[in-house]
Image (cartoon, rainbow, N blue to C red):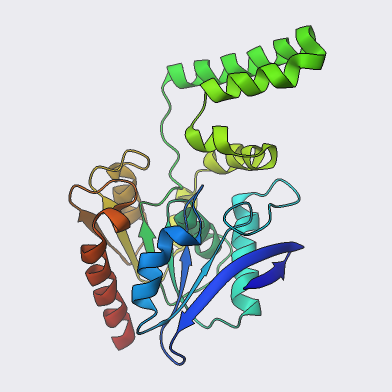
Length: 258
């Protein structure tokens, strides 16, 4: 299915039972609906479940301007409004969790409850070597543009392939610009404003968003619990799928009683 939001065709799927819990799944950066399919299929047995491809991923169109986290959050809010989704449970992995923090903690949207999985949004403390690498790269780009001019883009593209993360190297020019802004925004300030029941689920061995980030999130959100999945990495919900589904089921059942 497709819906037009902010002039962008957004692809989504929906399945499940009417008059049940409504759940919205938000995937991580570089992923798509497919990353949540096992969870979607299971949860849609007893709930109504929506999953969308963020603009720039999966089958959704790229943003036509450089989107910020706030732009993505506003798009999700418009999606919820247009599809008349009432008081959903928001479940976000990595970048999806980042968007939820912005949506609930800054834009004051109130869902029924929240599940954050290996969520991004806590800016890491950088070592001096990181900044040296970043500024050296920027300086090299400027020099190449001045010296080589006509061949500068070709040389810069080759340089990109040897530096930066896999996500950055594989992204289009527009998505690279978006990624730079998105990953540098620290959302700690939003957490105390999140007043709904929140569950944090994290992989013990997550190297992308380390476990210490989960503990920061838990300490800042007033009504928050944490579950650590032993041996799991950044995609903890897939690494320990059955355990994850049991945990989510129990959280949803507690929410039904309130």
